[in-house]
Length: 246
Image (tube, rainbow, N blue to C red; front, side):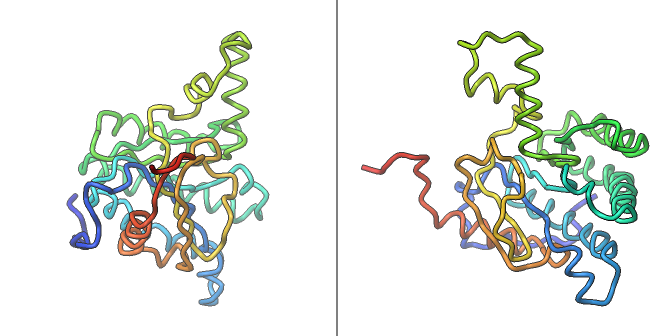
């Protein structure tokens, strides 16, 4: 499937300076629905169009990776009906979209714990999408599902213990190699929607030197133009990674 809404990349974006990897905290679905007198779950459903449009925006920019925060380890605390909806919605999203994304060269991967709490039907769709798209190289769509930044670090440390790594060999490289997807570069840019100024346990290790952009746009209203605006803001920044220009 080709881009359903082809949009020229703004001339204000320097193509050579496009971030290779962008992370997005997709926030504001519930508030979007409540402002319209709808159930909170309707906001999650409306967020599907935002996600697909953002993916195609990333493709048009030539980005290499897009990580989206779909379901956190803390989201299990939400009302049972909402959790059930989110499980079924994410399974349906993969069923509806995996083939069109595959046709456009998108590799779909998942970060997070694929444990007993995730329904078998959801896990099956996740494995199916990953297997279908595993050879694609245009863009990696990393879906953070049942994900927590602290949990990822804990799992990496557990892997060090299982591998019997000597204390003297434990360094950043050893830990990073045991994260969920060490082949992905650290995100250059993190975008959070809905006007909240929090990280919410997202990519805690990987975002050490990420630029942060916060927008008031609620996630269901987010489109590629908002991604472009975040990239423009990113390109205004001076990244020094702890050093100083001379």
